[in-house]
Amino acid sequence: MAANETRVHFRPGVQVTGRATADVLAKRFVTISAGRNALAGENLPIKPAVANVWALGVPAVDTVAGKTVAVYSGSGYQLRVQCGAAIDTSAGPVALMVGTGGKVIPQTGTNVIVAYALSTTTATDQDVEVRLV
Image (cartoon, rainbow, N blue to C red; front, top):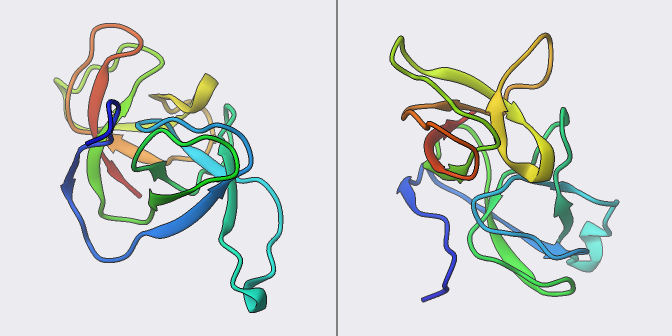
């Protein structure tokens, strides 16, 4: 068992395999880093997501550059990720976007929603239960 692992609460079906082009961390969002040659059987190249972007999903475990990893991706996954700010779900689920370092923060403006928070956090770097969109 890995030291830092994303805990999945519900798995709707399929996950994708990514090849890290930079070190990636479990519980933080990743994005596609470049094109790939699907006909040659290449895995999706992934890197840590940056703030305010679309994200592919969340890697299962911490992974160093050059290695492959399962990425939980797609609507319906319910799992724990790290937050980059306090999140208050006392009034119901909160729309989330990618913040600094691939951590989730409450969505603002028209930024891309990547998940909905199902639990409350009180500070940054805490685990929050989310449902991916």
